[in-house]
Length: 299
Ligand SMILES: C[S@@+](CC[C@H](N)C(=O)[O-])C[C@H]1O[C@@H](n2cnc3c(N)ncnc32)[C@H](O)[C@@H]1O
Image (cartoon, rainbow, N blue to C red; front, side, top):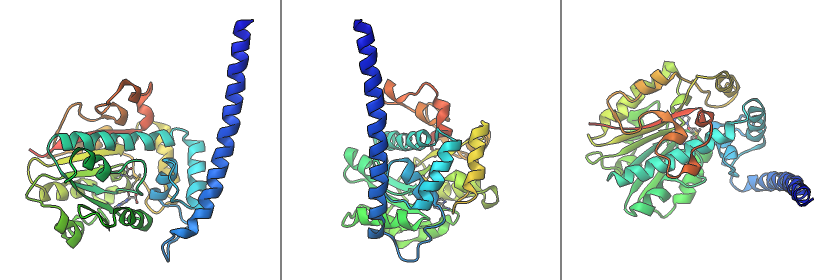
């Protein structure tokens, strides 16, 4: 009797929880829609989904449009793990930045930084070293606009619009050159962005250009989507309609992107397995994250 009452209560709680979640999600959607007009940059093509804004939606952010949300919903239907993957990459980035500041690196060049949400590099770095310097680079106008808005008045961090396929342009950008001292170690972050670079655009050559520009003792932190499972590969087809289609790579191909860097422990692993800070962070199926992650040091 006692047990069946308990089961009944749990069942009721679950039903109520689902109903309340559905109402909250729907209200959030309406609120997001209402907010859009406040921050839309002039001339932005809001009918074409952007990876930065889809990612923002997957992480629970509010800087996305109907086309992004629709694309994300269809993608989640095909790949239910997509929000888990985005969160795992973001959590890896947090741990990698904490590790890097702990290793004495206080300068960060975040390539494909995305829309500021859920803890950004400068917030994590400042918590350890308030003098850290951070440059965010993204190809997406909304990502850059929002980042610049967030960083207004901060002399130690900035965001610039740049295409990582043109490393020289990024490094020569006066804001980048003014903030980062390349004679001291820099951590180059490429979290969930190199799979937005096609083979034709030579991702290894891009990484090498940044590697050659930074001094020994600098680092590369990378998370990269892999093609080891059929449903991961589905995301490639879906991404064709976005502004930055993706190219998933094999674990060996991802490892080769670290050429010229020494991988620190534990090497190249599923994103949640890279130096988890608590046992809660390790999911039962780390491969759900679909991204391999690692941090390498330029010797
Ligand atoms: C999946 S998001 C990752 C965001 C962030 N790094 C994170 O892990 O939370 C990929 C980002 O890379 C940006 N991106 C794609 N191609 C790029 C390129 N060629 N140059 C710079 N940024 C790019 C997209 O606009 C998007 O914001």
